[in-house]
Image 1 (cartoon, rainbow, N blue to C red):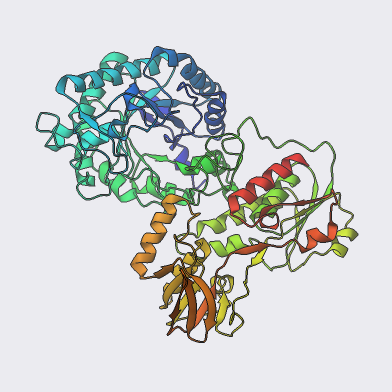
Image 2 (cartoon, rainbow, N blue to C red):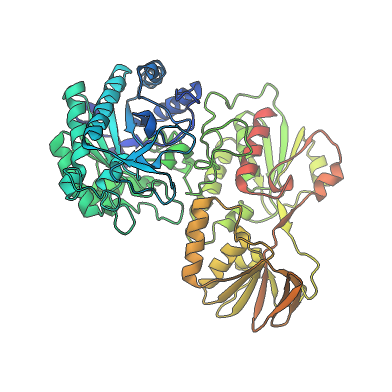
Length: 637
């Protein structure tokens, strides 16, 4: 098989890892207020073992209380954590897996509300995003930090872990020592590349002394930190050579920004990983939006790395190794880099913890389960957008007879249009995967079919799910029906082609600003106007930051806080604080005022208990809510 090389064993120190696919450290938010892993953590990690990962690395485990990065971070700084950590390793080993404990100290990135203790660092320089006082560690205090890392490694070994990873990345304490941008010391722990790496090397040697030379030790480094004055990849490669000399059994090359959105290309970090691989002789683990099997294989074949770390991809699809090995590539749920749910865990859902927009089963292992339906029903789903398809395949897998009606010639609905802006192409893969599941579970899909009450009544369905989406909102504004006024959806679907024009986009929500982004790619000059005071206010923070940066590069103009009162042949009039301003000299106007739920069919059925609304048909909103609601409904019918 083409992908066999991904499944060849390889050693990290004395430990044989059964394949080249690793789940790296990510905060699952599955620890309690006392810093112990919960039962859900066991389910979460255990599922990734069942999915075929050769090695798991825990989320960051704090080695000293002042080093907590998060109020509910899992701890390893006291023997009282050994029982809960042991339960985790037992679950992983029972499921046939291997697991490393990641040892961590936040340093100046101490989380607010995590502890009353003083934050510490190599220098007293605070983090710009976390402006708290930082105590500069003395030489003797550094030795105490080294001792605490070694003591934590001993606890990890007692808890049954197969090895440890020393967290020297992402701006935390050890990364602060490694980085010339933060480490301004004048003693033996600052200055040269070797001196800045000294504390990590001392920790490696201390762990080996405390746990034995056969106990595997990996070091995670940022590689290129990605900011002016930070570690470059050349510095990081030299430091990795020092880690190897100190006894490290592997190095794990990440990036200064721990989590990248879809604005970073798949495999963006491979050139940095390759630079380290060229430098050291121990195994190299690489990470960085490696979300496609062919990309993973090419990186292995080219010698860029020895192990592929699948971060957000392992959240999105915990069974991706198994699917690759069995040739079920079309069933892979591909991480889109949307950050809608994995990074922002406090949402409308019940409970609290990591999950995924396109796979809400993630993080609910042991809670949500697809069981055979006790009674087989005939079920209609109106609309083949993401919510409709998600409901359909789950219902099909449960044994129901499911028919989907879609008025367009293709599935996807507005989600397919959402894949049009630059860097969002992976959204289309979600729809193709859902369609694969629909085919596998015998769901019938009728395209070019606008379902009405007559058609549905003729089908004698036991349940009817309306996922018929939403229609563009067109407010009553004078002049809005002129020929040079277009809908954003017609721009994004290219039913209307505009090039080399001056254009006003009315609406600064996500659809509006992404429409502006697409239009700029065709030589247009775009100004976005809205009553909003902030563009794309509901977008996740990281992707929004990337998007706004790109719009600035493109030259998109914003005129916010203004209400449009009239549309003219060459522009618009808009009002702010009683003052009317006229924007002139424009060729076209594009409407992006949002959407209104399509409830016409639902109103025909009234209170019929067979009828269920999901997605935009229930309430116009984002895809993660629709997919989540679809999943809950499909599990209940």
